[in-house]
Length: 231
Ligand code: DC
Image (cartoon, rainbow, N blue to C red; front, side, top):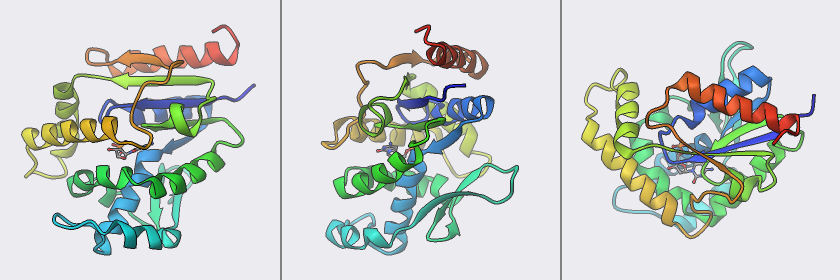
């Protein structure tokens, strides 16, 4: 069967990765979480003191970018792919609020974007890929056969993220997450390089009131129709 590229963009915490994983599993495609790559570079910058609350040494970080090796690897055949930063599994660390709070400034750097987009291009060469992010349908794969743009109310998104994170971190508050979601929305949509915008040929899905299963079936149908040339 013909394989396509499915690009899923949208605001943070809209459930992009959930639906992207469901699609990849169902279609036997590769799933790539491009946000994990920006998060891993952010972790690198924090660990090596290029970035902190009071300081962002962009020039030094840009110089050492070639030293950053990113890989998606599975611990075993059945597990999901984890993000490895220079050979170390950082999947857990990159999901913390600490990293979420610093990732937007990293994602504004053109040098970082250039490096990550080049890796992403390579991953899509054989098609059969579902990639989620902010610029997948606009910059990474402008010719993707199916482009989805996901939105939902900021309050709904913050509540979803809160429910996800509160089990791992009891100190986390809903307000803190809402602020983070709103801050990232603003930075993602207003940055100069590759801002979050809807591609002309993307299909917009607002899932404020749609459950995961319905949403999966809607997008899966779109993918099947695209593969069969019906749309
Ligand atoms: O999808 P996520 O929330 O894990 O992404 C983390 C951050 O990385 C997000 O705030 C913006 C940035 N990002 C980006 O700029 N471009 C992408 N393709 C993916 C993520």
